[in-house]
Amino acid sequence: MSKLVLRNLGMTYGSVKAVEGVNLTLIPGEFVSLLGPSGCGKTTTLRMIAGFMKPTAGTIELDGTVISSPEATVPPERRRMSMIFQSYAIWPNMTVGENVAFGLKLRKLAAGEISRRLGQILDVVKLEALKDRYPSELSGGQQQRVALARAMVIEPEVLLLDEPLSNLDANLREEMRSEIRRLHDEFHITTVYVTHDQSEAMAVSDRIAVMNKGRIEQVDAPYTLYARPRTRFVAGFIGRTNFIEGRREGGELRFDGFGIDARRLDGLPANMATAVLSVRPQTLRLRKSPLGETADAVQVSGSIVERSFLGEHWDYVFQPASGALRIKVATQPGEVFETGANVWLSIDPAQMVVIS
Image (cartoon, rainbow, N blue to C red; front, top):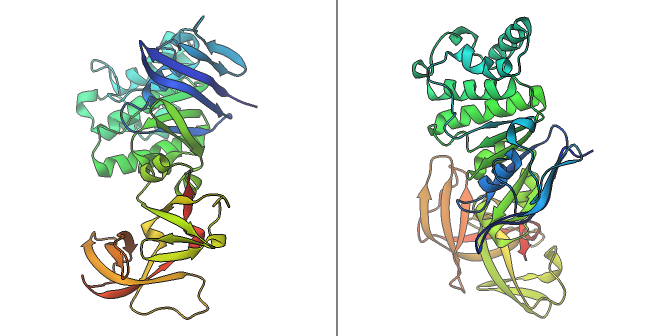
């Protein structure tokens, strides 16, 4: 059964289509991220889900009931949803406990129930000892936990998060994304998470919807998005990659400096004369000498034209001996090659993805 469904959702400002033809279905308890660059429509989509904006096309359904359409929109306070904003939006004149209990008091719950839920959620987010502190006395990560506790204590049907970690430093962002995933696994609240950070989305999501120019280009699990992107935009936005163009010549796809048997390239249409392929730097290998003739990998002779040491890995740029193509290769820290060195590049055709 579906929990939240977006059908042909659209939002137009005059002649500008901010969101167009968005279709997305979430099952109960699923964590889905809307990922894309600034201006791609992800926050507009989230605000339509929250009820802050009325769509100009399409519908939003919650548990099979339409809650948004161009004709009518259920107001935010009646949607059984909670939203966490980029700025946290916690009350500076209230203590941690008062902030978290605010939504429960608005719902006129009994004092005993409020106390029980408050104690439970503060224990879960590790803020029980800070219950009587004010926001100005908290760190950024502690303020984020207050916002999470306040959103979750009312037991929403859907949790919405709008770039919640963008105000935190890198180390704290990594810690908090793990915390968000831990809380999701504990409470199983259906969640829509907006971010422009692909590593953040990969770490917390069950599925990721990659958006570009108001449309969803691909929705898949993080590993599938990375390993099998369907479009050039998705391949370039999710991690780093090489885009190399080949032309069919007989039974081969010829690149600048080498060729590969076309039958070894999964997803290459038989009638395609030219193709662009995505090849991740991490799937490539550099060697000082070629492998044996029985090796499955395609081997290309060439040289190292650039290199950078980044601590956790080396970044090399390889150029084939008989071409001008430049290919990025990532290796382990111990795999050291000098600039100008003659090397062999090993390519696994199974790791090459044909881009539509």
